[in-house]
Image 1: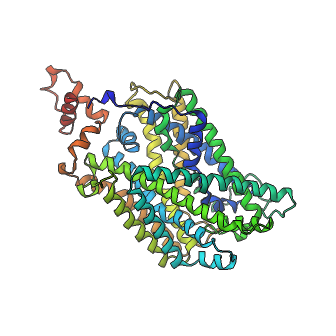
Image 2: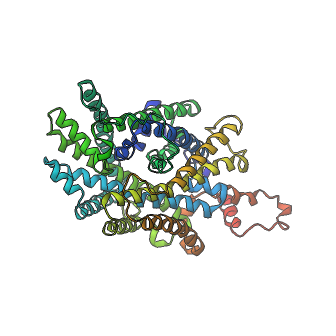
Length: 517
């Protein structure tokens, strides 16, 4: 296969607004609004701060990297691997996959609460939502349903994800904001603590901890970078779409959090239940309590759609990398639909084991929070690798064409890369501190899960990489997986100096592959 002939974009070109909407649906999730509603007006500061130091840098840096390698497989594996080597690239895509695997129980806990609130008796619904056994059963049921749908192929995933995103995220977000406006304009009592002001008290260190999880609210924007070549005039229209999408995303988060804080007092906010309680309170105020179960069903459908998108996404990325020789043959098995069967099944077993942690955590809420923090830590490591790799590649591959480039020189890349890296590092450090607003049980359990979890998860890909064998490589898949630029360099050595030069063994196959191509 001639690498030069790989299609870098489809014939169809995305409009600015279409790409902006795609960004919004990929990033926005309503399940995290209660976590920020406890901060009152200062929640807006955190949203804006995270958007400036994380959302915008992530989207813009990922766009350059995606355009730079638009004709090569690997995603974040390719981006980081070109800068730091295959071992570190494997770590990056491993973290992207395993982070999503650990994340499933947290988002599915929200789905279980949505199902609990389908009833008409709020007291009974709240009791059911707090029941560990009920939550565990629902989490596992929704996840395995999503897995079996994913095994049917991308067609099923695409349809359910599209409609689920609209019904379960965008429409409820708009409705929540509208309900807040109606509530205030008709004389409803404001339960939000207005004394905190816009700027938070940064002298209280523990107040920053829970807010650091807001960075993960904006996670996933780097995935939109794959569409940079599908936009007409990407150097002008892609940034425009990112700015529009980012502004709307921030508005949904800020106004949605305010709308929730207006109707639910900060002292009564619960991370897993308050969104549904907020809707129920609004509907009761407007004398339309019958609408509560409808919105609960919609939110549950949105959770299923979101899980489907992620089940079929990162697992497919590590599947492609695995077939290039980085995972044992067992993990390279696909079903008749070409779906990564064994990886999805192993992923399901991990999710099941994590869900069983309910029995050792003091409450559903503490389980929800500790797993959320672990996913934040793992994903932020991947982002720090991505930001630093983008800067390194400006020097290692300075002559490589960049269809979408941040600035003419390296100044803008240094600015956005450093801001994004430092923002991710700050959130990473803060995520280790237990939040004072939530009962997380024993601090020993909290630190043990986070520290040991990080060590085990980060160490695993290095062990797998060290154990890899030539027999792991699928010849057909490996032939389609373009070599790294540092593997191609020996091919450029003049013929009369090849006897003196001693290229590494790993370089020889790559050179021969290139000559065959």
